[in-house]
Image 1 (cartoon, rainbow, N blue to C red):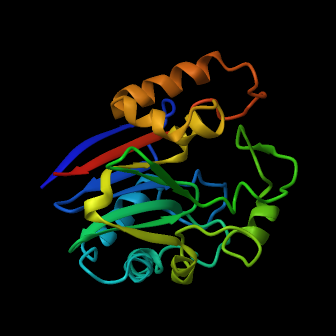
Image 2: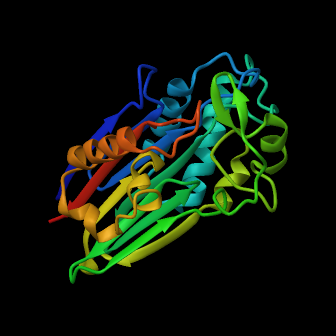
Length: 252
């Protein structure tokens, strides 16, 4: 039996590019990557994350999680390879966090800057997030369609490349670069899956991971919105509010 709290909120007037699903013994969150102009795809980001989430859900069973994600990427490729240029280096993609129970183990996968945070029954917290994107030296951001972002030429050289960072897009081999782990179910109290719109509480505003379990997920999103609104450090055209999604699980 699983107890669930879930919430998702767009960062503004545009459609929410996050996506989440919860099953009997599993959950996932996806953070769609805001698209670049001329990305070679006729579909929008919500279409991509919705289809990728559904493809993961039907394969979630007991196959190894990296294989589940790789097969899901291939399945979505097959739905639009005829209409879209999937060789484009900025073809639509997403970061991902997946958690499931298999037997007496809780397993997780993280690809990109989503997070899985496990609180054990003694109150200890283990947070798993992929730091390869944040660890890049990067180049100065530029205005891309009204938002400050890395230049597309730079992204093309580091996205799903050795020495760069990895996301779920058209290349199923990226799934093999995901972070994975597991804990015995008897050790696990709560699990929080969240997109980087919520991990800002820790990464930008100085909260500690254990503090995120003191509030409901709706309250956490409300808190990050308040902090963003009052934050004077955002530069012009920076993304003040990001889509934010959180799913909290407890196996009873």
